[in-house]
Length: 308
Image (cartoon, rainbow, N blue to C red; front, side):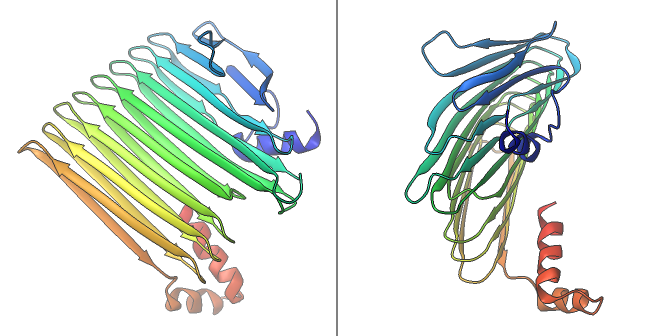
C-alpha cells in the first residue's frame, strides 16, 4: 500500500498497522490482505457475487473483525456483498467502512455500493462500526451507497455506529432490520454534508417479537448548499418498544427534511418518534466567543460536540 491508501485506512478504521484478529482489506476490487482465526472464518463468496462470507462460531467472545474498503484508483466503481453469520452467544466487534481517494478530474466518479447482511444468532451480541470518507482534487464525485440488513434472533443485540465524516458527494443509506422476541437494536448515525452534497437515509425496522426493542438516533449537520433527507419507518408488530429520532443542525443555504413514520400493529406496541431541525443558537456562539474563540472556531466546536 502507498501513503494515500494507508491514510485512508486510518480515517475509516483507525488502522495504523495490520489489525489483530480476523480481517479482510479490500483495495480497488481485490484483496489486499486477509486472515481468519480459529473462531472467525472469512471466505470469498462462491455464488458469483463480489464479496465475502464471515462465519463467527457460537460462544466466540472478545474477538474482532476488520473489513475496510479503499478505492484509490480514480473512476473505480463496484458492488460488494458481505454476509455475516454470528453464532449463538457470541460477543464480537465488527469494524467496516469505506474510503475513496478520487483525483481523476472533472466528471470522473468513484463509487462503492455495499450490501452487508447480518444474521445474528440467539443471545449473541454485535457491535458494528462503519465510517465513510472521501477526498480528492474536488473535481470528480465520490459516491457511497451502503445497505445494511439485520436479522436478530431471540435475545440477540446489535449496536451500530455509522459515521459519514466528509467528502461524500452522494449517498443513499438504507438500513433494514427484523427483530424476534427479546432482540434489541441500537443505531447511532452521524452525518456531515457541505457544498452541494446529497445524503438520503432510510431506516426500516420491523419489531416482530414480544419484548423486542429498537432505538434509532440520527444526528446530522448540513452546511453550504447540501441536502439531507431522513426517513424512518418503524413497525410494531408485537408487544415492543421503539424510538426513532432525527436531530439536525442546518447552516447557510442547506436543506434538511425528516419523515418519521410509526405503525403500531399490536395493542402493546409502544412507539415514539422525535424530529428537530434548527440552526446553531446565537447564545451558544456568544458564550464560546467570550472565551476567546472566533465565530468560525465556535461553530466548529459546537458541531464537533453535537456529532460526538
